[in-house]
Length: 349
Ligand code: A2R
Ligand code: GDD
Image 1 (spheres, rainbow, N blue to C red):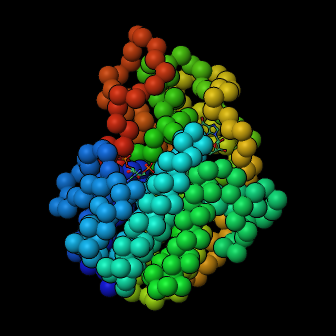
Image 2: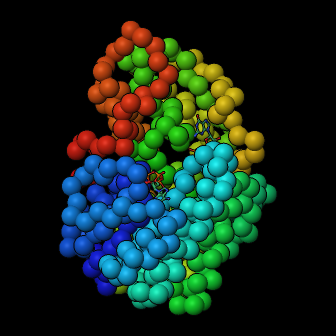
């Protein structure tokens, strides 16, 4: 799979997607020298090169790029949670926009031929998903509806502009992705973790949920990680600034996903709306037209939906079990466990 890139910088390496990208790189591209960019947490897997830095610190980013001159960069580091960005919009702009600018400017300065894979988001389409019933291709209007989406859209445009100045950028707009290791801040693990706690009698048999009427286009994180790696390492020449949607092409209603998960539970569960999980405004449904990436590199999701759900639920059952097993005392959160530490069995074969 390796092309021109022999040294790759991965920012956000300690996040949900970053950890899978590291695993997949080790499998598919063992000869590539990886620099894992971390921020606050400790990376749970052994890796030769770890660079700890704040993406908002322009001088630190510049020094890293000057010293390492990677030939490919996968830029994941971000405030990734829509609700968190709503609560701290300035931090979301600082990280998702200015942090991205720091990295891109230093790349142009020190290693302008490096391929720069910027991970944008389908959230940039926002209101367009509201008004359009069909799948969205890459020409769909950007209409961000929340600070997360706006910061990603601003960075997406800035990277597009810098491509005109020579940045060898690819802008990937992933639709929702999930799988083992994702934290409870996101919808499917939020449900799976509660099921695991209810089964272990560590939570009363009541599932707290947000908006069940929204629909999303979900892909397994392992398929998403493979796409990022292929784009970063492909020997193909891509038009600078290229935009690529990444999704499954079909949508699932959140309430239907909940039903599927509950049908896998070994317990009877009552569903209750938790007002704190509802959002002021959100896109009701968003679906990807992924023709472009399919045609360009032949990527398509491989992992069946049932496997994604089963693996995710299994992951949370293990987490809750590792956290002490059945409890007499009811508790609402498994904050103590680091849900992103993988067991070997969670990893791809
Ligand atoms: O908070 P940490 O130590 O886990 O680091 C997070 C990192 N990050 C930063 N890195 C450097 N400087 C910062 N100021 C900074 N702020 C956050 O980004 C974490 O390792 C990573 C984001 O990981 P997750 O929140 O787990 O997001 P996920 O699902 O892996 O999303 C990856 C990308 C993001 O750009 C999303 O916006 C997009 O995919 O959907
Ligand atoms: N988080 C969460 N928790 N969401 C819930 C819940 C709950 O208990 N109940 C219902 N939902 C609904 C949300 O209101 C939303 O409509 C949907 O489930 C998905 O929410 P999230 O999983 O938080 O994802 P997101 O769509 O807001 O954002 C994710 O996908 C983007 C790509 O489209 C994130 O991964 C972003 O980083 C990513 O860019």
